[in-house]
Length: 505
Image (tube, rainbow, N blue to C red):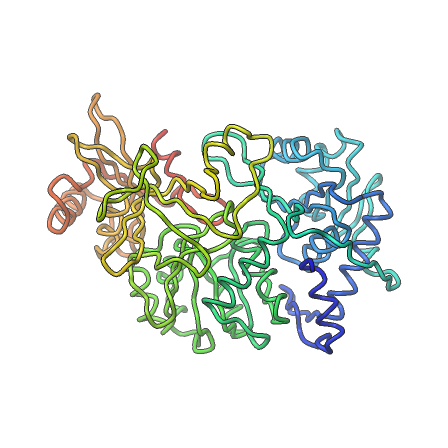
């Protein structure tokens, strides 16, 4: 059974009256409304000639249109490709060409950037959502407003491609990550049900866009698998916007990323909002500093479950557990996943030694599209080489030490940027920090980019104080030789710090 057939079952079992979606404008969509919209989107795509196996690019914000288009395409056996709506015009062209996409469903608000790209590709059928459809395009809104239709779900094999995601490219073009239908069920069963214990009574709120693997699980696969409710939020996830949704709709599960957890701690209203309905906070996409987790729990009462996930593994496969959180760690493997630490030669790391994290499990990607060499390098039999460097503690928890290519060698000794960043944010003057290795006068040095906490000013004296602060707790060579005070850091769409841009200056 494919995931889209879950909606059919839910309706047949009498769950249609349950609230599925709460929009940014606080309109409530029942499951019957969502089921109808998915059917109508499927009928519209079919009428345009979209067939089984064909790729459909989605450039959509977190609105009901995303659900209709994503599940409507899957209902036909087509392969939806949600992509980052903040991408450059040339990237959208690359996505369409690389995947041989035959259709694109686009928010009207993004047509300024997408219009020329689509016009240059007349073979791609364009469907416009949430606004007027210009000449030469089709209106998704008109489809959804039309008469009800019945489009039976195509019978798919668990190993058929279900959808693609493009991973953000740090040093080149994004990579098309192909996932099969069985991967969805695996992430729902293993993590959402096995770790979070999700039920139909849960109210999900995620600050991560649906085009991202993390956001897609939080906002679509997980809640719809049990008939729960999703609180949607569009636009940039500012602390003020987040707090409004938490206060108004009292989610029971809150999903976010370290940068936004840290941002909420600088907002006085965070402590005034009632967070008591949130039974689990979840963090992924980047390692969560223990200091941020401690402060957030003290401020809101919410314990954050930090975990490791990736586009390639679809969602979180190693996580802290409720009531047994080990701060400054990503927890232990989710049931059904195996982890190993490997040395640079691909052999198991010695006990107690750090190494590259390898993972195997049921939600692993099939391949990188059009990247045979990359697929062969990263997929080793049943294992995936993550590129993340971890150390396993005596308790069995995995502690992040940075990307393998982020490690710094100073004076012949390896240094993890995470150790220094974690120490820096323990200082009252530091709100956030990113550390990378740089060359200064032909010598390897450690540089820190620091966002100051409110009420603190940059000065040479503060630089010296931060250096001494690191030396007081870390090893003598684990301190920033250079400190840059900045207003913000380069980030991906989900808030992950792009350290490679800092290394480039």
